[in-house]
Amino acid sequence: MAAPGSTAPAVGAMSASALAEIDTLLASTDHLLATNYPGDDGSRQPVHTVYVPADRYSPSLPAEWGERALAAVDAHGALEVQAGLEKLSALLGQDAACAAAVVPRVLAKLQSEPIEDLRIDFEDGYGDRGDEVEDADALAAAAAVIEAVATGQAPPFIGIRFKCFEAATRARGLRTLDLFVTALASAGELPSGLMLTVPKVSTVEQVQAMALAVAELERVHALPAGRLRFEVQVETPQLILGADGTSPVARLAHVVPGRISALHYGTYDYSASLEISAQYQSMEHPVADFAKEVMQLAVAGTGIRLSDGSTNVMPVGAGVEGAWRLHGRLVRRSLERGFYQGWDLHAAQLPSRFSATYAFYRDGYAAGAARLRNYLRAADAGRDAAGDAAGDAAANGAVMDEPATARALAGFVCRGLDCGAISAAEIESDVAVPVSRLQKLAHP
Image (cartoon, rainbow, N blue to C red; front, side):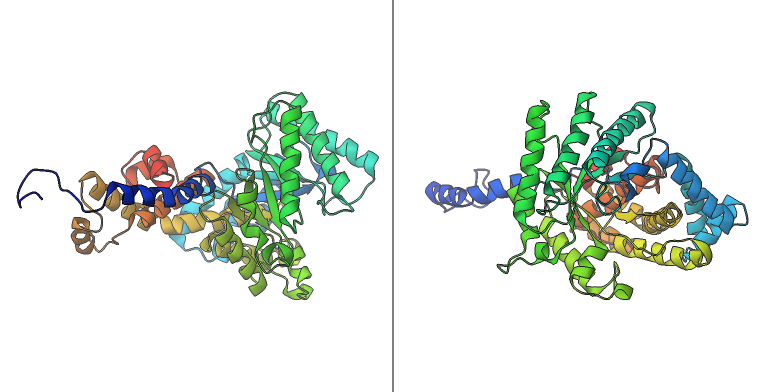
């Protein structure tokens, strides 16, 4: 053993064989964590998904929705958009400073990118129109998407929801999926933001069937393995608690690793399945919160995103202000609970979606930026954030953040940047680092 003060390397007592045995024991754990829990990849997640019946989609639809959203705000502001957005901010409880930052950003968003994610719906919003009609609409939808991408009218994310894999609709759903993807693939490269949504999933086997379907489409069209990922709609209680007492939703990421991009909560199908009376079906009902908490636990660390559902109270007619208040509150509630995406079903919901979303990020930005700046300065100075930095934090009245919290703060700011609530110039001024460094901190 080296004498105290000696420069000789320290020698531990554990044998090489014992250390090797520990490594062998934990090899499967290392593999599981590396392959099944890769974490979020840092790519953009849309703040919402807009659903439109398949026969109503055209390349110009996003711009038309933006115009309709602005018209709704115009009417609310006595034919003046600025005044309408200011009144909306007041309705949603935003103070003057927050509204001053939110209003111009919402206006710019509605003019430039009113829809972030669009789902062309062949399921509940479309119904059963017969095979001949649906075949034609599937091909027309693909042609419209191709045109929208080519002309720059497509939102960043776009795709279809087809009929579910229950026996009565399985063949129809698979045929629509096949026709749509085949038409896109035949025209050239698939849209980078292509989304495929599987509704009313109730068993693990239905998700495995979807994985088989997209793998076959990849094979037929010579696509890279894993190119076609899909979203799973959680709309049935059987996916939360299975017949054997386990939670099937917790198995999904592991039976088809790398295939699922997101879980979307279906507010009304799920609530109805539990016999909740129609007037009490809501995104904030206790049964909804329970299901969504299980979903969060099921995909934590897997890189699978989460989306909340929708409200069926539309901001139209005499009830516009009440509907905006409700929608804005529910959007904020979802964001505070870690659901950074939701569904919108009407153009007049876009102003309250973006106003509430931007206010969420603006409200937390100043404090978050200061904490990140302090954390990164301590890291650059070579100090332990839990050691020497503690004195600085106390002296400055700041918060002493752990690395995991710093990652969460960076993720929050990056999400605000992605949706337009925060600018890159603000980040580089207030956090005093390039955006690229913040992104690396958020997604190491």
